[in-house]
Length: 120
Length: 166
Image (cartoon, rainbow over all chains, first blue to last red):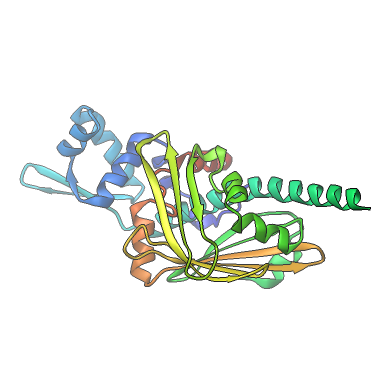
């Protein structure tokens, strides 16, 4: 089981479980965008994109503001959730590397033992 | 880092924390002597076997590492989600056999300096890796950009996490 601080587990995780929504976050990390621009970028209908944005907004990951007829989206302030998710990805990268490294270490130890025996 | 906690850990859990506003620390215990673990970090042919884990879908295209103080490295990876190969470059600052490695990460403007220490206890190697960013803002930026150690996409792992939380 993954150890995870309980206070960081929330709607963010459901929001992040969808590839399009993760793409939207990456896009907004670069610059703010309107719902229309996001719909274009991800080749979706306006209605479809509105739904995704609403899930992200509910999770606090995205904030939207309507100016005139344009609704602009930017990254929200739920930095703790973002950071916890990021650190977990970072940990998983190292965990995956280290699992492979275990195999290399094990093999080197076996090789050393075999070489030692051969010398005797 | 909580030292007593890592002492009592018998399993090979990989732990990661933002230990200060500009640093990340990863710890892990390996079942082997420090000289062997250190070798696996400093010989390119060994490094290539574990640095790009299969479970992340990353493949090594090339690995050059001149592991001595002032020596440079260049790792090039391929990833199915991007057409462009990703190159990671930097320089080794400190190389102390079997105990300490320090290198820079120079693919971005405000890259971290990575320090790895190897400490042998009872035949096991206690490894600590620290990524020290030049400023709090630089680390915040790395977090906000979504890239982990400059990998553009590592959300597959997040999916795995989500499943485990359900």
